Length: 198
Image (tube, rainbow, N blue to C red; front, side):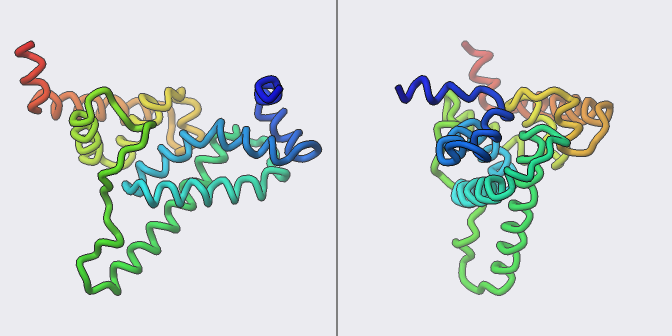
């Protein structure tokens, strides 16, 4: 019975309607399940900390569910959630910088990199995953975010344009430049040398 209930709401509009007029708890659960990977991934790219990304994702969904009844549909739910995620991450980043300014110890509470890897981020080769994440961090922010949304989230340039407020032409240029830089970094990496010997 739970299986049929889970898949009874297929679209964002149906979930929102159910949240506003029906079983709000069930709708909220479906809403979070549908977008939790997207929100978490976006937060992690900005904050570079798994703990901070978890905190950010929770705050994003708290804000989103609080305002879901007022969602007017001027953009897609995904674009709306992305904007909320950016606002939350910016707030967390500012707080972290403020804390670090007044901290005199080793700064461990604002660690940017975590050793814990979530299932969403696992590649078949964990060493390569860490290396690839390091390569991504070398890209300028716009190139990194465009590449991530296009490659990992598989969004269209039109969808990304609405999220980032950048023209499709500019996004294509960012993506092309990101691919070129990543290819160059990968070519000079230990992994390429290993693969060439196989």
